[in-house]
Image (cartoon, rainbow, N blue to C red; front, side):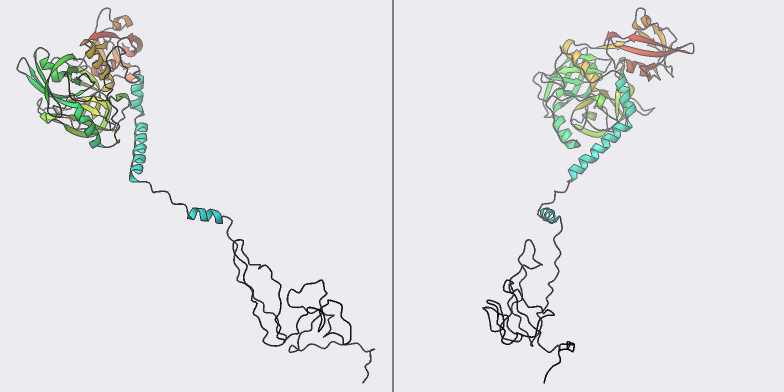
Length: 491
């Protein structure tokens, strides 16, 4: 039968069961997998047509693609997996595929998607193997709380700090020619521990037992201030032995020794005694000027004859004008006020900060009105002489047995209130040279309000002889102002 070539050829759709047509690859193209049919490919090679040398074909060349459905396995060139990680190995290929029927297509296997590592993967690994910092302990938290508390107290007591600054006392000043006192070994204790303060100071605190020539007696406390056996205490403790008698010093170890009276100052209620070969270490002085209201303090002494007694409290006020001393010898103190329990017998003992440094000398207590003298105990108001003043006085007493204090050379009315009214001006005194007169009412000293005669005396004694002070006063209802160069008196 002949065919008509003039008729167009219509391609018959391929039955899916028929094998897929194949084509011959050119020699320069490697065999990389299943052959994709093209539209111009014939169903097979033309019979009798010569094959190119080396060209793969059916029955020709050195390599050929097996016919679909044969037993020869498909060949696939090795290729890098698209899912290969930078730190892994390529995904294995399935090389064991066998078609289940003639013309079965190569199976499409979609590998599971693996997301790339995060950009900070290395930092995450480093953090994973870095040990966590140790938690803050309670001591660190406690120290932080204490620091915050002190800062708050300083902020709340600016007025008190300003008062001290106006007094021109820039800290304790030692007399270069005098002995070194209050410079014992640095306690170096953990701040905030009352037990540590007590353990450090108790060996330095002694008990004093005084017997006077007139059969009077007294007990009190004191503490070592240098390595020569000098002990600082109150004048009213040893005053009974000033004109004869004996002073016994008992150390913490119970050793009793006889002491000699080196010197005393009724004006400041201070005295120094000495025991040669005293078995007690020297204390270290702090700075009472730097004390703030609310800070913790410890009082050590022999209240009611009970040696080695320790009490604790706070500084409840500063710059309190207080009178103390024995009969006929009145002392005026610009005192530190404390609520640490102080009782008769504590006099002369140290008031110390939480670094075991002495900032005051316990000297007086407040009493309830109407109570008999000597029968009242602590009511939560005790007073201590600031160590800044006591240091200067002690140095003078050790050097010469006497101490000086500043004066203006005028008497004031102790009954007047609302200022200090001048009742008498001594001829040739600093007050007379400055122009003060009887009847003038002094209201301020260096800008600080003066409310009573005691307040004026205490404020003057915080200075040194020779210093200048500015006094504001009223005369005939008109305000006036003068500058007075302080004089000096011994006592």
